[in-house]
Amino acid sequence: MHLLFATSIVPDGALSSGYEIANQAIIDALRRNGVRVTVLGFGWPGKAPSDPENTVLLGSLDVRTDTAPLPRKLAWLASAIASGLTFASAKLRVVSEETVRDAIQAAGPFDGYILNSVQMAAAFENVFRDKQSIFVAHNVEFRSAAENSLAAKGAFQRTLFRREARLLEVIEKRLCRNARFVFTLAEEDRAELGVASDTRSVALPLVTRSELPSAPGTRPIDCDAALIGTWTWEPNRIGLDWFLGKVVPHLRADFRIHIAGSVPAGVSSPHPGVKFVGRVPNAQAFVRSAAVIPLVSTSGSGVQLKTIETFELGLPSVATAHSLRGIAHKPRNCIMTDDPAAFARALEQTVDQRVADVDGTDFHRRQIAALDRAIALGLARLGAGTREVVA
Image 1 (tube, rainbow, N blue to C red):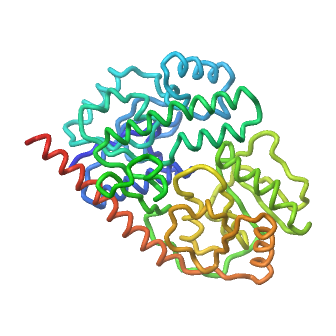
Image 2 (cartoon, rainbow, N blue to C red; image 1 turned 180 degrees about the horizontal axis):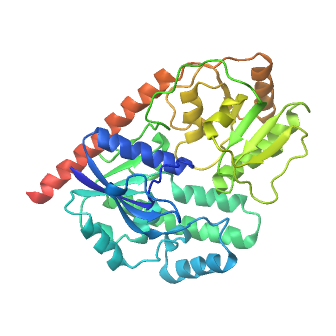
Image 3 (cartoon, rainbow, N blue to C red; image 1 turned 60 degrees about the vertical axis):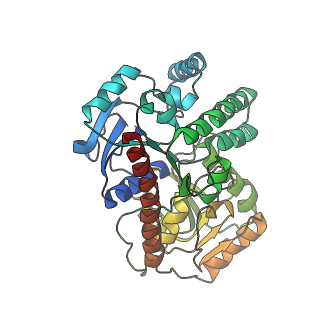
């Protein structure tokens, strides 16, 4: 079976965000199931695709909102309003539908689409209607947009998020309805999207690496707690704000917290132990330098890739209930609580008691096996649909 994996940004091997990690895990699982996968989408400026022989590029595009100049943001907004698209999908309309069709034709004969997330699927929805498809819902985007509107600081931003939420609810449910099958990244998202039936969808257990992590061993500790993420993404920002505003004030003054990743303007903490370190050269080495990992997600949908990575590495952690969405097995060195004071106490106790790492090999192996089974279910439904069309 040959499938065209249509996505906004094609893999370049960097795996610098949860979205990119999830994409690579899904593509790898498709190929382990015997599928020939050709990826269609845009590349980051200055970065080559990691698998150029199986990639069809539509051009290069920087879709980051936080670093875009104001004129570009205004152009995106104008395009979104004029086209009736969401802000994220409007960013991709730098090429015509005819250009996308030509690129698809260049991929050669194929059996169907994997429509990866709502952005690309909605931007060129008419183009992808000629064949059967599987829709990959990374999140329930309309729910995230509604939560973002409640957390927005100003009236203009709040209005934009409300518009996104209204459009996304219609678009996501239409994409799910039109797809032969739906992959979600969290069990709870299936019902939210109206595809809870086992004949319509399955939740994908994910991994952050194809190779099994090494067994736990002695590692140097540079700080008490470490957090890393794309904090400019609103759901991540909401979790970070909760941690800094609600949890950190309960921590003792000498508790050392290192926070890596791009942080929006205005994010700070008066706690003397909080240090913002910016981009780090090796994300895995960074989290392994901490005695405990706070998993602080409080909003959004989908699965938390940082949670999966923490469990794969066997690192001690304290997690909110939301951070454990889509996780079937919580390791013994993870404490779950949503109470800020209890969260802080658990962090301190984990450090003081020198809670040990666990072997993440078994967790990783179970995730890989469950992911491959889930992918096989979707492929079987797509294959059955293809045969019905031929007949």
